[in-house]
Length: 176
Image (spheres, rainbow, N blue to C red):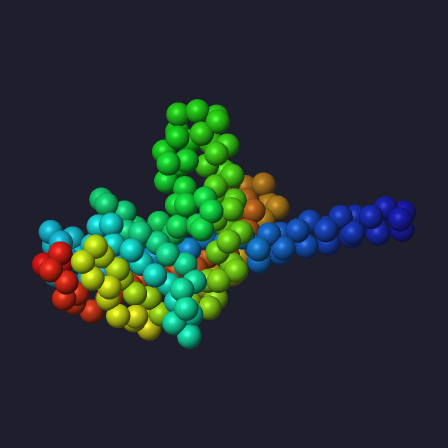
């Protein structure tokens, strides 16, 4: 009986340990931008490149504003932004597997640098904006609940980073 209880405790610790590990090593990063005077009155510059920097001004990561929506897609150094894989995921199981592989690489890449983001700059075809200090919000993973088999609770835990950029008015000609 003691061995069975010990085994149950070890299994529970292993499950919780896996959830904690997954939450610490996998993340998602959400970025939205707002800018007065942006093209078409949309409040963001479609196709603009967002450069995330550390306290020393070194580049940590890049992203690109979507052309239709105020959503920044992060660009992984090897796999890119996963957009093509995401589009293919709706049509085939091979597309879903490609998207899952791309998403997995993105999710493992983000925690390596996201805590160090200190400033952001915007780059367009005609100009590079100055670095603007930012504060990234971080939401820790619910690793204690990851194993719960309910649709609204369960699932592997991720750490979530969020950044809402309110950039000063851009003085580039293509933003008017």
